[in-house]
Amino acid sequence: MKKNKIALITIFLILAVSVLLYFIPINQLIGKLPFVNRFYNNTTLEISTKAGVAKIWINGEDYGETPASIEDLPEGSYLIELQKIADEEAFYKKHSFQIELIRNTSARIDLEMGPEDLLHGVILYYTPIRTTSDEGFLTVISNVDNSRIFLDGEFLKVSPITNLGLREGQYEIKVLAPGHEEVEVPVLLQNNYVLNLKTFLFPIPVHFESVEIKDE
Image 1 (spheres, helix red, strand yellow):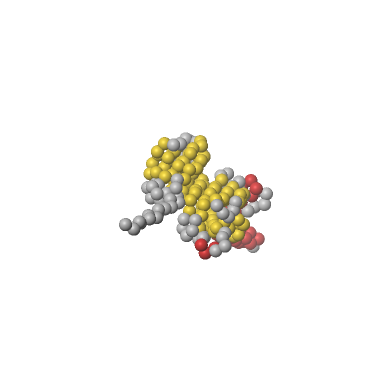
Image 2 (cartoon, rainbow, N blue to C red; image 1 turned 90 degrees about the vertical axis):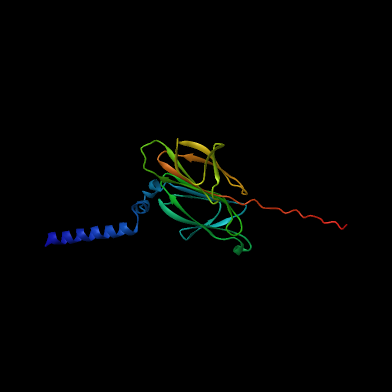
């Protein structure tokens, strides 16, 4: 009888743990354990907005206003929402971004927010990659099709770029597109990680000069 009780308790515990792991990823579960989280959640998310201040929500939770440096978030996928603060909030749209946070890495959102859908700046974050080579990898996406991408001043490729292998180190990335303001950002490539760089380019405003017509 005693053995049967032990067997039933063991089965119950296995089922309970299985259900828990199904609904809560192991990385997030470990990150919530006391004392362990300060070592496991070694991540940093920096959010800044040029020419104004924006409200921040992370997975629906209010995280204050920009600029913000948020540390020790558990590893996982996050929904970041930003809305520029203005007298007429309807003038500025709430923008949503999905990013990955990987322990021992940092992520950055650095944007200028214009009216409607207009954005200018960058979002960057790292994701791990399985490889046998000692390289870092670069992925670049632009909101403008066929943008030209430069690496340390030299033309590299037309966007998008996916998992381009480069030696570990710091680089200067510039993204250009006709009729748009350029984006330039320093990046650091790390071995066995993909640096995901999303760029947003403002269209250059068009100014029409008035022509004075003289009566003959």
